[in-house]
Amino acid sequence: MRLLVVGAGATGGYFGAKLVRAGRDVTFLVRPGRAAVLRERGLRIKGSGEDDRITPNVVTASELRDSYDVILLSVKATALTQSMDDITPAVGASTSILPILNGIGHLDQLSARFGTESVLGGVALLATSVDAEGDIAVLAPGAKLTIGDLSGDGESRAARARKLLGGAGFDVTVVENILAEMWSKWVFIATAGAITCLMRGTIGDVVSVPGGTDFAKAVLAEATAVAAAAGFPLSEEQHAVIQNAVTQSGSPFAPSFYRDIAVGRSTEVEHVFGDLIRRAAALSVDTPLINLATMNLRVYQHRTEAQGS
Picture (cartoon, rainbow, N blue to C red):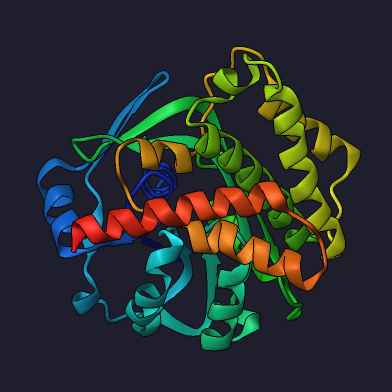
């Protein structure tokens, strides 16, 4: 089976490199600049006890010709439209597209373009980033990929994809209700992002001051209320895990949203926050704190884009 990994950044680069090491047939679809770097330096993973380098097989959009069995889509949501155009030559009748993006709005776009039967749902849990040299820096050990079908087509496409993705040094789990898993992660990302971006500090920084823990719990309550109203209530265990993560004393944790604004990078504000508050409004769920975080990030995004123009 052949795998096309779209993007060789913190997520796609990590999973793709692991799969190459496991002997899978992996090709990375990247932009010309990234392709030049990877061809010269290779793809490197380092940090948290890992130190590895592979020589990846890379292609650019103009070089893509053949179809693939599985396409792992690991770009930012802001690049989704362009990526759909890029992968079109690689999508055959039996191709499964596995997007690892934040939120859930991308599922509608991919299904409209390629058909719901071709699209899987996916959730990636890992702590990685791309450093100044373009290497994949592992910030904490462990990685997990959860996947599932959006529609049945006889033999599960997710089960077939697991045969390609499994046994490569990270956990791969197939679940029946992948949308519930995606909503749970969306709640976590939106909660952690709103807390840290509004307060401009790590979780530990926020909960160290008077009112910080109550503020974190209030943001989580808003996000969980939206998920419940949408038909995907968090389990007690899921809620407890997220609440512990966003109220842990001394925690150095800050999500990628916070790391992006700390260094002046663009964010996925509309795909994670904008989409969430639009759904909340349609469901008549009040989200004043998340609305405030959304405005904060929109102002930041506007300023960032203005400076880059």
